[in-house]
Image 1 (tube, rainbow, N blue to C red):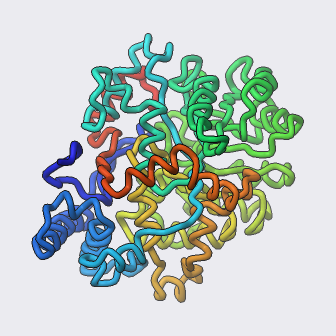
Image 2 (image 1 turned 180 degrees about the horizontal axis):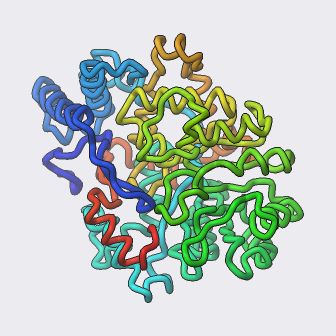
Length: 484
């Protein structure tokens, strides 16, 4: 019997109100609620027809295919014509048909993972009470200390056992001086992942808050000690809640110049997903095009692509400059062409829009046109949302409609373009060899363990983060008013 959801009450494709702790939950609209209801009905009917239990059905690829197909039907009935999950009718009943669309052999490189250190000093301030909001629903975690649900070990299980992810980058959260994941702790997780016959599945970022005393000065020691793959920064974050601009000489420029002198060519910056109104302006992408033009030899990875949950994505509107349009406007204003040195990352962003095919089509279409099909990067913000497998399966099957392609000039999401987004483009910017990594991953410790696990896989289908505004603000209060 499954130790996770034996009654099969959870869908394999998770469309809910969960957040990563950086923004308040947004309620599901009536169409999304109806889509979830239709999916529950469809999988129950399919399981009965096949004569198996609902949970046994849901853990197969047919379960994911049926869930996506039911959502499609609901979206179509609601007049959403921008895109759809391409699922053949027989995929709900035939494993081979389901595998042909929701399974895959791509090299998947997730450039945004997170976890916390359950034994870190950050817990002394009481912030752990807020992080319990992430862990409290995780039945998979039987430890007496529920913060262990958000540990590096659990993250590796969710990512490398319960998803098709091949390699990833472990990133940092905005916090200082006590951070739930300090760079030496990230390095320990990297070492844990590397106990795999030398397979380098996990890279790590160094965190720099250039508006905090000593952060820029400490960059050399971080690089020397931990061999980071890039720098991560949060322009919205700073002392007293005030952020900074990347083109500020005293902050952003100093950080970029230091990274450039070090030979670290990757600057990852959180843009979008506003951390609150106090520093909202710094969440916009005004400065991205400026520094990209000033430093053409540097690569700027825009985490979340400027997406704002409160803003509905539509055709590009340079006058509003909200959400992804803020990024596109900055690139156009500063002459940054597609295929340049700016990359758009999809962590939390794809998960948010996959519950609305019109927004999903506009967002992906606009990004491919603005930064280029080689510059859209896969990221999921896991562990906050549990296993990223549902995001992978939804993306594999999603297609921008012919109507939107013709009307707005959006590219078709061909298998080649999807492979680029899912991993090939990220590998290129980080200087990795997909073929080499994929080959090693198939025979390393995690690969062998997953091969043995898959015939009797038992995914939890759970998310970790706050799902209501009450839970979110309790998390905020526990963190002294700061996001998780």
